[in-house]
Image (tube, helix red, strand yellow):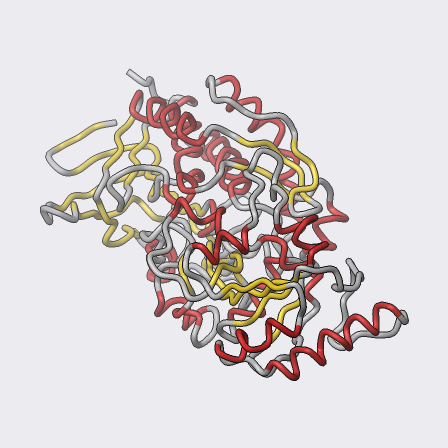
Length: 452
């Protein structure tokens, strides 16, 4: 790496210091390449630093297809094949990796990593052969007409500007979930009103940079990854992301303001979240069996097992529990729900289950009556964690412009859209595995330099 005033020359410029960016940057540095990382926040970590550190995905292609029929199977298979080596790499760096956990969300498999240790270790690796610029924003990518040759940047507090010239530039800014205007444009009208369950700096810097140089977008999808959280809620804090998420909604019943079911709840909590996102606040209903077996269980082994609905009520959400369904009615009426239709819908549901009749809307699994007291209701809303739509890449992570790879430009992590189209098969895993793989591919294209 060479520096001349505020002009830097490096092998790789990485824009974004989340799990994807830091995995790629650290791997490249360990491969002997000079690296510069630009991060808009005051610290590295991004949304991964706010997570529980579970790196998981579907265990095979059949499960992936079952969860996301239109997802990118080729990228998934690459990611799955790369996962064992990625875990080995973490352990070789002295980063603690937990035992294998199965049945994540009922179908996934993975391991928990020590995220603080991950970011400490990768930071050390990057700085051994490069630099990390915090509180710094990339203004534009530098395009010589045939390839991307770096980027110009600005220090956000001082306004000081500079240029980083690089043989390869990587976009890894973590999605656009914190940008209401982009959500409204690229997901659906009103998506910008969704509650944010993520890093507040994920404002689409990467997708905007890519679009300016003509990078294609992935095919349209209105879906995203998120969870259902209590309503109303104020000052939703990162420490509450897991605490307040109602992961068990696929075992519950969900009602609109008219007191009617409107979806197959059993398809999954992340699917329910996407459906609810277009409706606004709705009503979640459970009985004593669901409370005992689902609401109060640990979502993933090792997580706290608490009554998430009751916890939400203590936090100020609209929550009520009673020994009869009828006693719920005055309360939900005060929240704006049709209690008569609510009662009829529950009765129809239980009758259909008992008599083994078709449901409308259907319920494809977990077909049990909800008849055991106590009964509880919680008003819920959709919250977004990260976006599925993004910049188009080939299987190696190289950006695609007008259907062809763009020399010098790569996309990793959530900015690389299309892996999922509707279902959910893990978040951190794509940054770790595909970030590391792309770093090795770039390394093969760059003449290695001595780290010192």
